[in-house]
Image (cartoon, rainbow, N blue to C red; front, side, top):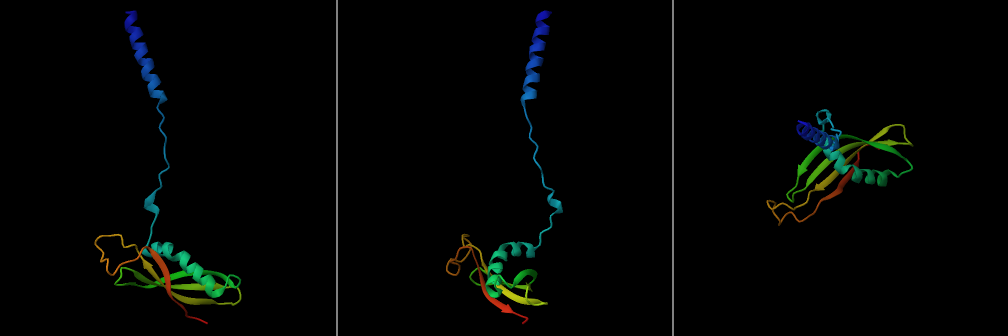
Length: 138
């Protein structure tokens, strides 16, 4: 009888020891249902640094108060597997009272790594460049 209690107590203690030594770490899970991303948000994230450098070059850092993304005017697909994105931006200047509107055409060239792309026309890696910059208001 004592052997049965001893065996049950050893099994119970070992079960308790193994159960208590296991640690479960919880992770913070983001609620992705609340995040809403548009095509403009994605394009903005890609071209923002390139446009920012060009705006500073056009207006100078001293007179520039900032700039704001207004909207995409158009997207054109090119034959060499690149996209021209025309973006309207609004310039905030320290020296003038009003805002200035500019139109920036940015060429986004995705990498030509895919085997389904025509290698004769598509010979570039990932690249972003300003194709045209127009000051719409003086």
